[in-house]
Structure formats: C-alpha cells, structure tokens
Amino acid sequence: MKIVVVGAGEVGRFLCQTLSEVGHDVIVVESSEQIAQEVDEATDVRVLEGNGTSANLLQNAGVSDCDFFLAMTSDDRTNLISGSLAKALGAKVTIARIHDQTYADNSLVNYQLHFGIDFLINPEALSAVVLAKAIRHPGRVAVENFARGEIEVQQVRISPKSKFAGKKLGEMRLGKGVYIGLIQREGQAEVASADLVLQPDDCLTLFGHTDAVNEVRLKFEPRNKSDIIRVVLFGGSETAIGLVRLLKNPRFKIRIVEGDAKVCQQLAERFPNVTLIHGSATSLRLMEEEQVGSADYFVACTKDDEINIMTCLQARKLGAKHVQLVISKPDYEHVLDDLRETLGVELAVAPRTATVNEVMRYISRESSQELMELPAGAGKIMEFRINNDSSMANKTIRDMPPGAVVVVLMHKFQAKLPSADDVILAGDRLVVIVREDRIKAVTNMLT
Image (cartoon, rainbow, N blue to C red):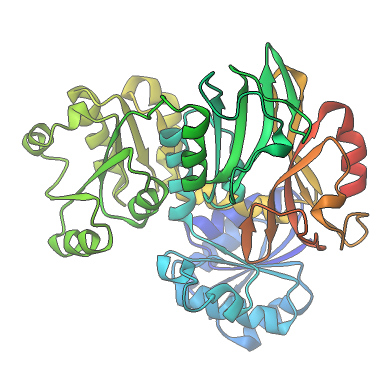
C-alpha cells in the first residue's frame, strides 16, 4: 500500500520504519532538514523536506492516490490541517495524531467530522487505556482498546440471591449499554443466546459502558460491593487526565501529585472528586506524608523518564502494591523489559509504541483478527473489518448468523454497543463473540 506520513519525530520515524519493513511504499514529509536527512539515511523510505500543511507539497508527495495518510507531528494543529488537506486532495483514509483532549470533546463540535479526518489518535489516551486496564480489572481482554477505552469488559458470578437467577436471557432487562456475551458453567462456556437460563454460580462476561456495567454487576452480585482502590498518579499530564476519566467510578480514590501549582489548580477545577497534592514525588518526605506506601496503585506519568523510574522505585520501596510508569525514550523500553522484575515495575507503557500498534491495526490488510480465545474452547472474540463485498454489508445486526454476538460496532466517528436495528456498513469494524463451531462460517459471511 502507498502511505504518506507527515512528521518524522520519535513516533513518525518508528512508524515509517515499521511500515517499510512490512513492505509498504512509504513517503515521509518532514520540516526539519536535519531530521529529514537522518531518516533518509537510516530508513528505506522516500523523504520530502517541507511544510506538511502545504497543499502543493502534499500533492507532490502523492496524497491524491495514497491508501493511508498519517499526520504524526507533535503539533495538533499541523496534524489536523494536513489531515484535512490530504482528505480534500483524495487520500483514501486519513489518521491524525492529537494530544490535546479538547479535540476529543464532541459536545459542541465533532472535530474529527469537521476536519474530515477518519481517525484521531491520542498517544497519551492510548497509554492511559493500557494502564487503566490493569487497574480496573487485571487480566481483562483488550477489547476496550478497540473502543478507545469506552467499552468495559468484566466477569461477574451470579449470586443465589440475584433476581436474575433462574431467568432466561431473553426475559432480562439489563438496560441500555450492557450486553451478556458469554456464560461459563461447570467448566463449560457458551456464547449467550436468548433461550439460555441463568443459574446460581454461573460466570458471565459483560460488555458495556463502564458506568452501566458497574451498575448491572451489583444486580448479579447484590452483596459483592467492590472494595475501594487507592490510586496515586505522579504528574498532571495528558496520560493522568486520561486515567482519571477512565477511573471515574467512585470505588477509585485518586490522588495526583503535581509540582506546578497552576496545573494543580486547573486539574482541581476540572476534577473536583480528585485530590490534588502540590509537590514532587521525588521527595521521600512528601511520599511518606501522603502515605504512598498504602496505595494500591502508583503510576508515574510525567514526561521525564528518569523521574518516572526513580519515583516508581521509591513507591515500591515504601510499600505500594502495584507500580506502573510511562516511558517515552525508545532506548529505555528495552532496558525496562530486562529489568522489570528487578525494579518491581509491573507495567511500563510507551506512548509511541501504543500509537504505532493502533495505526497498524487500522492499516492491516487482514479483514479479521483474533482478540482472545474464550475459556473451555467455547470460541473466540474476533474483530472484523466489513468490506464492500461482505455479505453482511448494508444488513442489520439482527441479520447476524446464529452463534455470533456483536458486542462493539465501530463506525468512522464512534464506537458503540449495537442494537438489533443498527445497519452494518462497508468500512465498519465489528467485535464479535463467535462460537467455535461457527468461526469459519461467520468469517466467510463477514469478510
């Protein structure tokens, strides 16, 4: 495929190298003469030096017939403008990297739709999704990455005191925003269907929006109140903001340690339920005073890798149960892989790696991929991209074949839990729970 990339910083360069190595025809546009020369010498890509917001330069780069256009500079405005221009010039699919959460707020204006960009990718938000996954529900499947952190996946066991025990799934009214996808019983697992009768001690896999899933969970486990989870975030970065949004359930008690008083004030105004501490986690005295050692999770998410590493070591020594951090420098990623056990850091997330992984999912030639194998050989959770020649294109969710449950429908500008009447369009992506004996038939029908 022909791919044009604007921006050859850490993310753009890594992306160009990865795309080139798997056989794509890559053209990169870079405004810095020095960086352009370095990329030209180090990678097998065509390099053009110049302004990525110049329509003439983009035309010369061949955006009019490119399969993908990727705006990956560190400046949001440059990415939005160049992505919009590329779409107007004929690029088939445009993806823009953003940092400011402002552009993800669709309450007044849908920026993605306004600029005509197919996908907006926020490296910090992607990192927050990975970190939050381990905090919200350790071991949870990564379906939430597909929905940019909006879709929660939880397992719940039915209490004998639940009003749902003894009822058919088709008779239950869970409310909007929640699906039952899988039922496990006595070592056997089965994809949910309307005629299945729930029994005490059944284990259900729930899909839905975070608040809705947590509310429904209490109906299945009336006496199982979630324990309070104490989370300390070091640094009021975009990653921290993403984590606060993903951990908004009351069971998470969040404190943010931030050295900039102005940032503290801004965060306190935006998130009144979060405790802000003005200071530095590099101070052992402050860490002891704030009882960081009693935290369930300590997450270092500043933009300084060295400080993140040192504060994690400090938190682990003080007794924090789980320690996570964000790493930006490529060289440190490999070091941490080797020293993770020694340092006691359970999870290290690299924004550039998270971004490249997300981009590679969008541009994959594969029309289907496996996300997870279900327990007891019941089947798989799979992601499908609907092409023009798919037999399910322009049909509704209710037309899906038996043995398959669609749990996420992603159209260009939104990810949602589908209703039976939602129409499946070419270009949509579906996350589907598929029974083992139906995988081949469902795959053939969708692709």
